Image (cartoon, protein in one colour):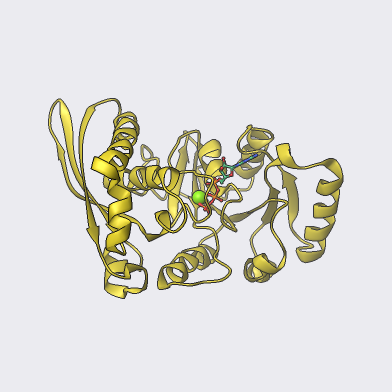
Amino acid sequence: MHKSGFINIIGLPNVGKSTLMNELIGEKLSIITSKAQTTRHRIFGIYNDDDYQIVFSDTPGFVHKTAYKLHTQMNDFVDSTFEDADVFLFVTHKYATINEQIHLLKKLKETKVPVFVVLNKADETKPEEVQMLHDLYKKELPNAEFRMVSALQKVMTKELFAEMKGLIPEHPPYYPKDEITDRNVRFFITEIIREKILKNYSKEIPYSVEVIVEEYKDEPTIAKIRAVIYVERDSQKNIIIGKNGTCIQKVGTEARIDIENFIGGKKVFLDLFVKVLDNWRNNDTMLKRFGYK
Ligand SMILES: Nc1nc2c(ncn2[C@@H]2O[C@H](COP(=O)(O)OP(=O)(O)OP(=O)(O)O)[C@@H](O)[C@H]2O)c(=O)[nH]1
Ligand SMILES: [Mg+2]
């Protein structure tokens, strides 16, 4: 009797969805930064054992006020989770307002599948705040369960996982049982590079960046990777590169170390280029090329 199903993790940007998914599956798949809108795609993290395959789905944080076509596409990924969910983990934190979450709350009210309101960042939340938030979400989503976790400090995450297991229906596996994600190595390489850009640059720069792996040559003792960092303006290109190339070198070194770990310790040669692609965030053709629909 095999069980398999989709646990879809949704919520506003920066609430800790990716941290929670990585913690639940026990792998660092999704990138995590302190900046909002880190995740831009729907990414499956798959848990397998003999009798179970649980497909956790990390999603972009829902963008309440969209400014670019990119944001609309990110929100479409979130909406698509309503088509296949067996369970929803609606992740929130004390800093989120009902107004920002109104779209998601409305959709969650209408869904037939179990919904868990997961109040994350328990480590930053006082007991009286928890009570207040419990009452608030009970009013918004009367049928939902309310749980509190700290994804970062691994508080109550094992318990949440056990509870999720109990909700998975009987079903054959959706994916081969040795797979931990639906995404390929190239995708995770672009994400690792983007993570380093999010961490090393401020203001609008990380949001203007998209990365493509143009070449991935897996040789016996080394993986040779050529990747292009796209920005929207010449001035941004200069900032990414930095004086005498120091900034991009730092990104390259940090990304290379993580990529080496990700592919199992093999040596990596990483060649980074920067190109300008005017206003790509509003360009349908470019968005498609970057993997948005
Ligand atoms: N204090 C605290 N911080 C947390 C916790 N979980 C996640 N964070 C932090 O919150 C920030 C955002 O975490 P992410 O996992 O990237 O959040 P996300 O919801 O995936 O964000 P987007 O991808 O932008 O939608 C990071 O700095 C995390 O370290 C937690 O339990 N406690
Ligand atoms: Mg994320």
